[in-house]
Length: 212
Figure 1 (cartoon, rainbow, N blue to C red):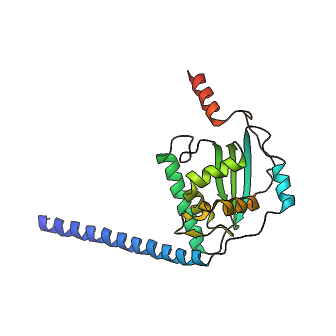
Figure 2 (figure 1 turned 90 degrees about the vertical axis):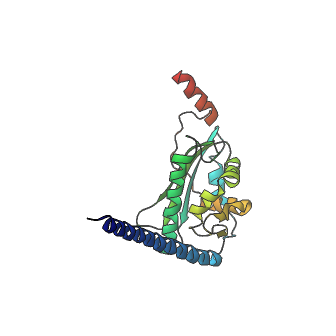
Figure 3 (figure 1 turned 30 degrees about the vertical axis):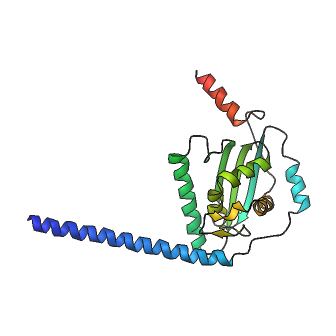
């Protein structure tokens, strides 16, 4: 084996890797262009919230320092939307593990728990969350501080406010987003909170005191 052979093999390997990266970049670019065309055709829902359903939800809110939210949305058709959803889930997961402070989502510190679940074998996307404060303040925090993450996920469901490039706009249309969010909500059948009268700040302080 000569140095020349090693150099040729190394160059071939490098060119192969660069070629694969170029193909991958082209594929991702074409997917985003196709997604952008779909976004231009999307029709945001403008129907009002059904009063009877809203009253059932409001009846269970603001009884303690914490609230809960259960929402069920319908996925838009097509494999591209499924891929976009998986990409958003992945980026949110990486951000939560590597970027955000423990217990925070971006700079939001009022969330006790939040999870999306794409129900297997269906086109239903469920969202569960426990949070401190009112529903209004919770959504305002999301709109102001984490709209890109919300939009990256929920823009792949029916009726969501108009979105660009998967992460832009969407929830930034605050009033429309709030109406959309209310339409997705369903009554929570069971909910447990260990500290119903404490906010997340107080819980963290108590935890530090307990650890000494």
